[in-house]
Length: 169
Image (cartoon, rainbow, N blue to C red):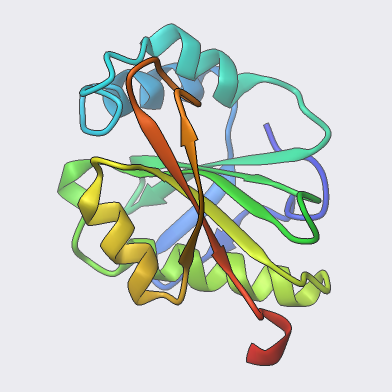
């Protein structure tokens, strides 16, 4: 489902496309996402992720990532959120990782943030997900807070912020 200011699919991102996420695609992609870290580490249930992705929520825009007609992952953006957009979910399936697709999605996220006059950009990653933390760090995000048990008991999430975002224009 997409709604709100980020809801302008399809978006072409140089080989990848963000398209509206319908409930059937949400269930399929959720089942694939929970089989990989960090979701598999936390034993995150596929049905819960599918409900999240398919929910009609006026503050969130949710997309299916397609590459060459294949389902490659999902993206969810919440806006507004603390004076900017919050990238709630960026999940790429293993066959599509390490190809610059995540960087293209972050560039789109930042461009949309600029268009909407954001002061901050926000993301969150599990503390054990060092690959994601390094990825976001390379793109200018800095830790802002540790959130114990946000997603699952026994696991911390690291909230990251890109600021001052307005100075990047």
